[in-house]
Length: 131
Image (cartoon, rainbow, N blue to C red):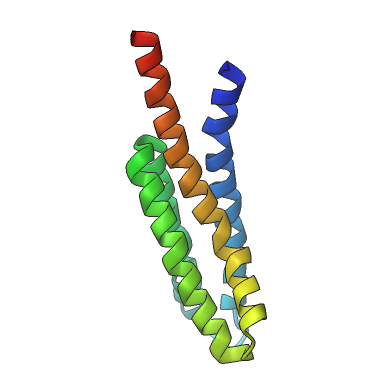
């Protein structure tokens, strides 16, 4: 039972970290040889802004699993909707747009749900041990 608790504790955290790193990879297109160094830095910061917001959500989820899990799940769903609509305008294919949105945002939704599940799992185990 203790191994299950450790796995349920670490899986959402690791999944969220890997997903943030994946989203951060897309910031590499911020650099342009035609821009000055300061323009490139500002552009990089703007491209990494979603990653910074997701890091804040992860920190909240790490400290308060229920609240953070809800925040991460909602952010994943909202970001997924935005990514879907953005890609639908660009490539005019519902299937491809849905696939891209799921690939980018589904890890955050799953991670948020696992944070919530872990919160209630710990709460249930505490009540069992207290009885």
